Image (cartoon, rainbow, N blue to C red; front, top):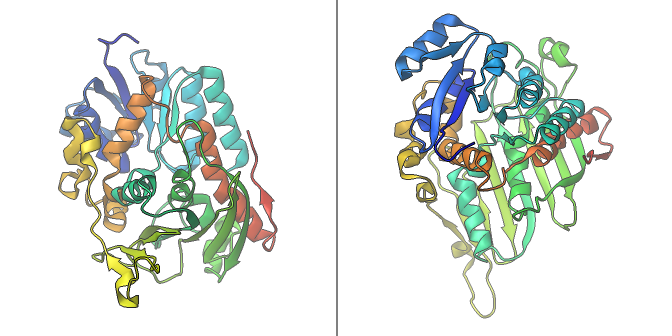
Length: 381
């Protein structure tokens, strides 16, 4: 790819996916070239709104178009695996919303297709580019937290009323939002932290109607997983149905000097707990202090900085935004990371192998829960 030729991107799926259109349109060196959606009415509405002339209702047409360099897949979860493999085999770079797939076999196939193609694959995990996570990572890198001792993630969501494949979905099949920050924070450039094994327990029971769809009975699945080469253990909790809880994607990091705890509910602030020492004693009430999380738009090209803020969300009525608060301003960071990886300026994070590991933590966790809490080794590709 010459320096003069723009990176031509096609977005697949225009519900949640439409949020990314103006980000690509404002990214220097990228061209929001094509959109794809099965429903022609919705396709044309989006194409007219954003002035995109190239429109496809068939994914194969996207793969056959030689002008398209990269696809950004925002299709339903069951389509992530085969669509990613097909695009890599067609010589396209791939960005795909989470999770990578719903089986170890799908994850393996994507990793193998990426290696064979030499193209970039990046799972577009929002939490590790949210302002909250970026703030915790900043504190850790600066030494404020000290030595990390324990990590915890939770993703509680009420999916009642969501259509198609969602009813009864095993909670841990969609666990990357709580798994990813626990592994990302321990990662270094060129050396991602990877989960080694997992133990998971299911709790409670969803309605029989929901159970019949996937054979998964649990209202909540809670897992602990070991991290390769580390003495730190992480805990993650997921719920999707029949559990009363306001939406929460959260990440807590406990350190030897200070700890960060995500806010418990919307419109609250996170807490930083500072350890009292003999050299610098802190009274018990003052150990926990509310903190304001800064925005990290300054890390982005000027043209897309505005998209970290809720006011710039294009599809704010979509349920993922109503429940998820706009994903912490992560979307422009994801686009920036993906394009820079495609251009060869920086490694994709997460790359194919790392994306597979993050996804398989949940897949293997559900396997563990279904077997009564047996430890499951996470495959290593």
